[in-house]
Every structure is written in C-alpha cells, then in structure tokens.
Length: 70
Image (cartoon, rainbow, N blue to C red; front, side, top):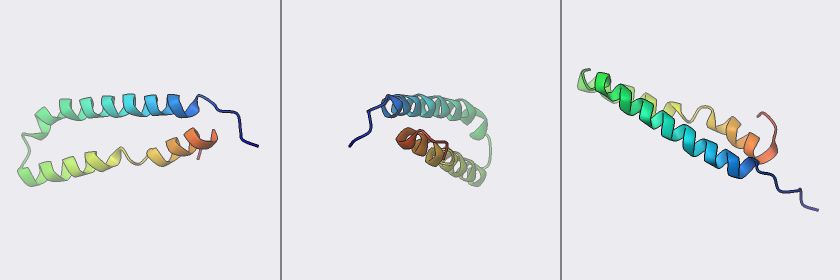
C-alpha cells in the first residue's frame, strides 16, 4: 500500500528554487567586492561559494522524501 501523497515534495522544490535564487542574488551582490580581490583569491572564493550551498541539501532532500530531519 502506498503512502498518501503530501505537499512536502512540491513545496520543497519551490523552497529549493527560491532559496537558490536568493543565494545566487546574494553572491551576485557580493561579487562587486569579490572582483576587487586578486584573481587567484577570486577563484577560491567562487569555488567555495559554488560548493557551499550543497551542504544543507542532503538534509533538505531527506526531509522532502520522508518528513524526518535527516
């Protein structure tokens, strides 16, 4: 027997899209100061910012699928 469908997945996807949009806008806003750094330091900053958003993703996806806090 299948579980009753919930709104967790559609709402989670909308939340994920909204959160990523806010994060991207924040990085875009920070870029005006990042561009003043040396090119090698810029590379490191953008690599870190490009990966750091993945850290909470596992727990968020577990919540979307199960309703538990990973």
